Image 1 (cartoon, one colour):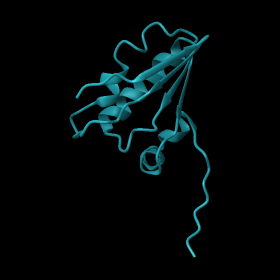
Image 2 (cartoon, one colour):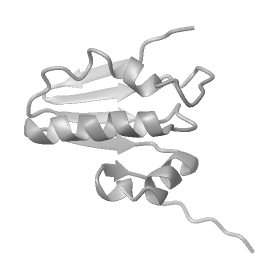
Image 3 (cartoon, rainbow, N blue to C red):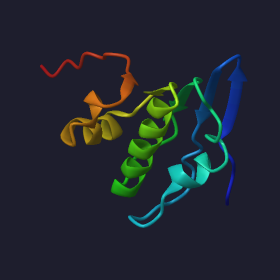
Image 4 (tube, rainbow, N blue to C red):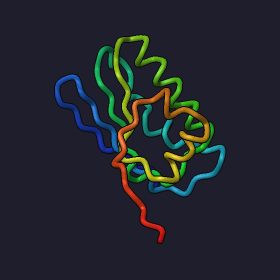
Length: 113
C-alpha cells in the first residue's frame, strides 16, 4: 500500500504529515519517498514535518532529514519536526541531531514510583 502524506499549505507554511503505515526495513526510506516532490522550490518557507504516524526512523531517513535541513537553511527557509514519539526522539538525542533540527515536543512527565 503506497499512500501519500497529508500536505497542508497556509501562506509560506507547509505541513507534511507522514503516513507511517508501512512495514519498513533498514533499506527502505519512507520519509524520502513521501517527501518526493513536496520540498522542491520551498525557498524561504517554513516546512513542518508531522511525525505522528512514524514509530521508528532509520539512518537513511536521518540522512534525508539532514540533507533537507541543509537545503532549507541554504534557501533561507526553516524546518521544524513535531509530534515525535519518544522512541523517534531518542534516536535524535542519541545521534545528537536534536541540536541541528528544530524539534517541538510536548514535555511529558512520567511518574515512576
